[in-house]
Image (cartoon, rainbow over all chains, first blue to last red; front, side, top):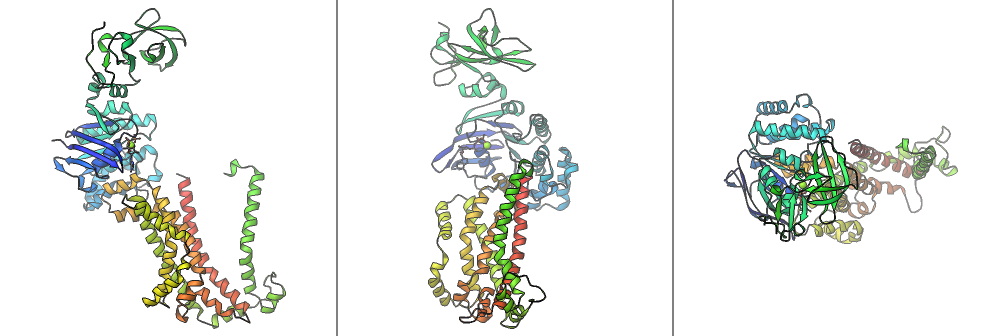
Length: 337
Length: 278
Ligand SMILES: Nc1ncnc2c1ncn2[C@@H]1O[C@H](COP(=O)(O)OP(=O)(O)OP(=O)(O)O)[C@@H](O)[C@H]1O
Ligand SMILES: [Mg+2]
């Protein structure tokens, strides 16, 4: 029994089944990240946990208690939305204090808790402003502050950083990680940015089309993906999938991460032509087209000069290859014939 | 916007708008100027401005003396304001339910409520009159308020539910998680955000009610519940029409609608510009 248990949860909108039976346990104090492609049901699952949608079947347990019929406000959780969802007519202070006011807390306590949360997020100077008078990053901090003030048992974040620019996203990501350490609360975080998932998560839940594909720590998913979907989803740039038969294995796919493939002008396992080069300073991405395996990505550290349409050779990392059966599932490697 | 438009286009647009304004305001202007003139002057030169030679307040004096004009005014105000209040309140509530909650028959209910836009309520006059007679509401303002509320609701529901669909779900959900009741969400979060739409609905609802002659004539013709439009009819006879009085009464009747319109249109403009400078 964890802080949150989902038991065979399903959800249908009319005839379409969006969540197709999810079993999941999130431990006390854990930072759990839901990732998956757009439309796979991440937000829907989060709304079911929050009580904003009813599950069609299955049970939701918070701290071991079934909460299917408990109103959202009574579930002792807080949610941070992608669009911030601040109350436009209230000041920052009242935005943060509303939930406590609704719960009937004395005014002095509300002020103290709001001030405390504001200090944690350095919002002190903004407390009397309206949301319209804040920048995007400040609004997001207020939204997080509104969640903290309630000292919930469970935090739910629905893509909280996707409306921020890159620099602010990194800063806020670090802030959220710090909050998790300080508050020691259970957090569930939805994102489709896999850098956020890898850096924040204790455990990642990979969803596809309403089903859990794999659950594990970031490194487990990176080093030991259960199928091509997870393998392709975790890691950036994406894993290369090669034709297993062409390499002398039974039909299926062989996965090789771009950072594990060697590149040389002289010799290697596979030959191809450079089709594009991206130089990022610290690393260089070389896109190589092979007649047999299609377009492959190689990630090299440092600066490298490769010219487009140059002939190059790729070396596969024999000990770090991933073998997948034709149905996409991982299988044990077979000896090369 | 003006920065992106060439001067020629700006002038053309303004010319078109000014022409339209003049055409629209001309009848009103003629009514108002003639209400300040003597009967002879009205017929001698309808377009002349009221000047010391032809200036006459006889119309207004007649209106003040004859009939209980302030009572008519009051009746019109009560009927219009009360109907408007109920149309906006019930219309917004129905719109919220239709746009926010998924229930069986939601779409059908929406269509049913919108049907009234296409079917004129006057077709049901006989049945309405029978109903009012049966419930003893003939010659009461309540009868008018009920009919006008019914008349205004379809358009209100239709327009407001369209707008409410656009109110952010996240905002409502944040309210739910913070423990706001559905009523609090409706009144404090959703209504303020659809205020421009409410103002639009208010204007569209108010004018026909204020100007209506049909239902006051049929449902409430008694002296003490006459509305201003009906009250003004005493000056229009089969053989003689007291034009001074009719024009004066009409001029006076413009004032309250104008005031209400100004109030609502300020809301409207504020709502539009608030959205623009996001
Ligand atoms: N109220 C609704 N009625 C009908 N279908 C819905 C409703 N809400 C969501 N869906 C459908 O459920 C599916 C999952 O939606 P959801 O919002 O959970 O996706 P998501 O994983 O959060 O995607 P994204 O990453 O784009 O936010 C989508 O196919 C969507 O069309
Ligand atoms: Mg989503």
